[in-house]
Length: 82
Image 1 (tube, rainbow, N blue to C red):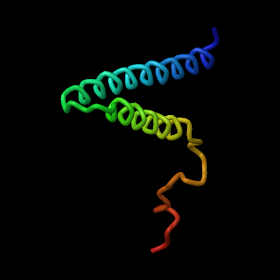
Image 2 (cartoon, rainbow, N blue to C red):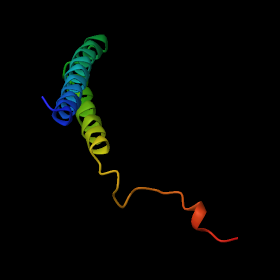
Image 3 (cartoon, one colour):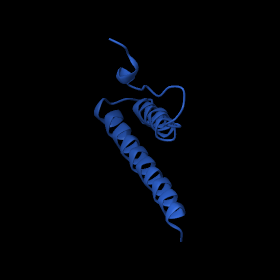
């Protein structure tokens, strides 16, 4: 397997593992909170995975953002004249 393909595979495998672990913790944590607060409706088991999903989408967008894009902040101190 070429080096570039292996790095891409490892990067996506890492993101998938993080996603599965985060959703598992959110689901079990939400279930635990629902039982702790004697909630009749499963509020936390819906809210926590939703928040994790939103957070993971933001993380994937930041990780895959083009580093040479318009949002890149450069330090142009060498271009300033005294």
